[in-house]
Image 1 (cartoon, helix red, strand yellow):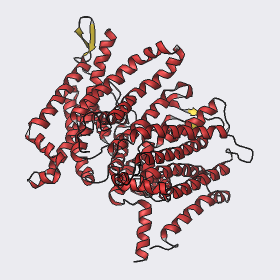
Image 2 (cartoon, rainbow over the protein chains, first blue to last red; image 1 turned 30 degrees about the horizontal axis):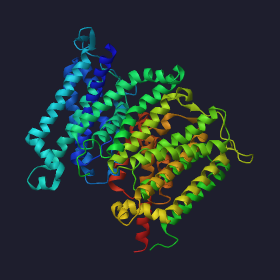
Image 3 (cartoon, rainbow over the protein chains, first blue to last red; image 1 turned 45 degrees about the horizontal axis):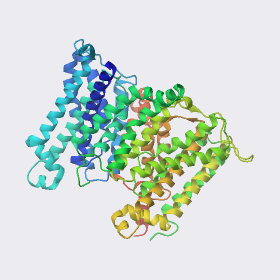
Image 4 (cartoon, chains in turn red, cyan; image 1 turned 120 degrees about the horizontal axis):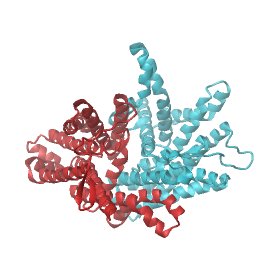
Length: 305
Length: 334
């Protein structure tokens, strides 16, 4: 039972983290109609920045804040230099161009930080476990991730639905020309939105950094998960991204934790232990397939597309 | 209006001649490494040709095409590991498995279009990648060495490098021919019609879903063949054969060569792979006079140039190599 609670919390934490990535991806797609494969690279950069700033400043929180701004800046730069030229083009162009960006970022990271990878040590006040229920211990850092991501999700909702900038973002999503004609600096708005998406990815990366090693290619595996989430949730829908992310986070975590045992009840132990790793990594894709069969446009699709 | 002696046709003839005469050049004292490089080029060109069928002609932006390379390769590798080395068993299994995978993936992903299609094909290919990495019996992440190449009846011997190369070239040309026949058939017309305007095609009574699915399966099967060849070429299969960057490479080959042109993907595959081989060398030559010995280190990071170059191709040279050749033809005959 303890294990179950712990794994559910892990699933929640992972799901919320994935939400940060998927939200950025879906925001950029929904508003700019831009497919950004390099989103995972921004996640990776967030982690590398955090690890570096932590060495420089010696403070985890300061490093986190600095790397958040750094990824925001990188995101806005990328938008101004490359992405801006891609709006309104074929999606295949987006895929190819951002694929080129991935190669560029991966090699740049290899050039700057070397191929070994880094680690980001946790400060003592986070590196302990707390008693969440009588008798149930849970990592304080993972709890902190849950709190931070939940508050980011809420503020993102408030930003998009309740503020003037959010209103412009939503307006820009539905009709770019009209918003521009009304005197809004749509270019700047797009740069900001892209930067926001980048910062969200960077935040996910820097929070994941102490749990995993910071290494080249870390963004690519998680990017695929973010894609699965956007497909499940419906592209362009932040609500869909949240639901999809939680689904995927739970199923992936629970699958890895309990699926081998479940399989052992059905199959012989040897067959189960050989099939389990392959099958449990398939679970989320099966989920995606089921959603596709039932609702090809995703659970919360934004109608017209 | 272009005649037979257009720049495009000359380039195609030159390309085929280079492919056919390469072993002769090597026999005459050329670099032996070229044969291995060109076998690889030809095999990946075959994969790119199959991708071009759905991407260029069918307008289906599959980002998971490398999955079939892996499936075809693993069919050969797994059967060889189990002691079945006959090519008459291995290759049909490779093709059949790829076709089956394409059928399932296609049936699901063709229900959607556009970005969804890109992401879904990518996700399913990635699933295949993880599954291959999870099967411990066949090497898991470390891959699987293929100890013996596929066996056929005596005169055919895949371990003979020149013969294997010619088999690959023959299969490449056969697949280009097949694609040519396909796109000029009624079936091909429907596929291309569905690319330009699917609603209209459906309105005049074509069940486009079925046509597109068939096309998708054909392309997957062809790429499975490329996978079987690749496994025989490298004597090794690993999940990285179907890693998504490989799918990206295939798309680059198609776009670089020119989408929806018959020989475009072959040009693209050759251009990309030769360029990849040469770029470190070019960097070294260009940078050594400027920066001295550090240039040798810089050439290790050649991919840092590859990314921006790709970006430039996308932004400024949409038609790819085929587009350039066609532009040449138009200039000659105003």
